[in-house]
Image (cartoon, rainbow over all chains, first blue to last red; front, side, top):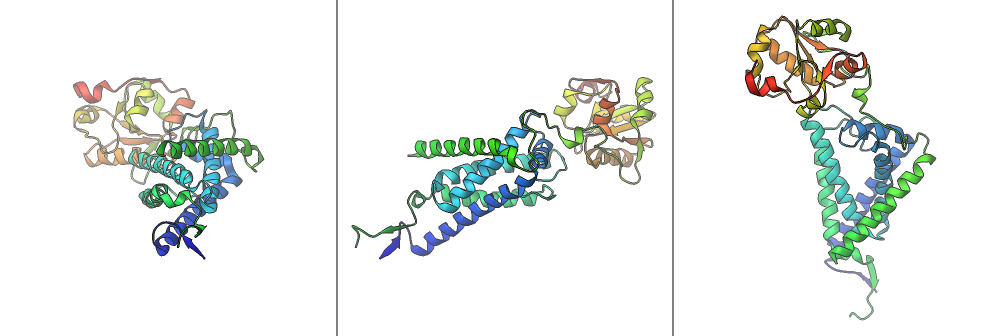
Length: 154
Length: 170
C-alpha cells in the first residue's frame, strides 16, 4: 500500500495540484514567448529598468529560467528550488510592472505573449502566484516524491 | 538546509539562463544578443503622435525656433530621473501629480507653454497640459514626437536637475 508523505492526503493533493498548475503556467508563459523572442526583448526594454545592452540576454535568460522552473515544478524534480526561483521571478515581475505603472509608463506586460497591457490586475495575478510559490517553497513535503512505499511504517 | 535550497535554486537559475541564451538562436525571431534594445518610445517617431482632443499639438520643427528665441516655456512631464539625464534647454520639470505652485507664475508669464513626455500616447504630457489649461493658461501645446524626436532632430538639450522647480520658482 502507498500513502502520501506529510500532512493529510487532501492537503497534499491540493499542494501537488497547485505545484503542477504553477509549473504549467510558467511553461505556458515561456512557450508563448518562444515564437517572438525579439518582441519579448522589446517588452523588457520598455520597462526602462534593464540597460539596453543587457536586454536581449536578460530576455533570453528569463524564458530559459521559466522553462526549466516550469518543468521542475510539473515533474516534481527539484520542485522546491524551482518554487524559490519562481518566487524570485514573480517578485521581480511585480516590481517591474508596479514601477512602470507608478511612473505612468504605458506598455504591454509581456507576460504570456500577445498584447496584454500591464495593469494593477497583472500585479494582483502575480501576487497570487507568488503566494502559491512561497507555499511550495516552504513545504518540506516537496523535497520528497509524492508517493512513497510505506516500508518501515505501519 | 536553507543554504542548500538556495544553492540549488541558484543552480537552476544558471542552468535556465544558459538554456535560454543558448536556445535563443533556434527560435523563429531571436532576441538580438550583443545588440542594444531601447524602449520603443525612445525610437524617433514612436512617441506622442497625437495629443488628446482640446490640446493643440506642435511639431519639433515648429517648436525649435520658439525654444531658440525663448518665446515659450518648455515643460518636461517625464520622471525626475529622465529629466536630469537630459531635457530641452531651459525646460522646467513638472510630472503629472506634482505641485504646479512653484512654477505657476513663470508659466503664466510665458507667451506659450509646450509640454512634452516620451509616451507613445502622450499620457503624461496630456495630463500636465490639461491641468495647465484648467488653471487658465491659454496657449498650452503638446510636443509631437516628444523628447526622442527632439533629440533625433537636433533640438537644443541640456542635463542636470531642475533648479527652477525647487529653488526660486521663476
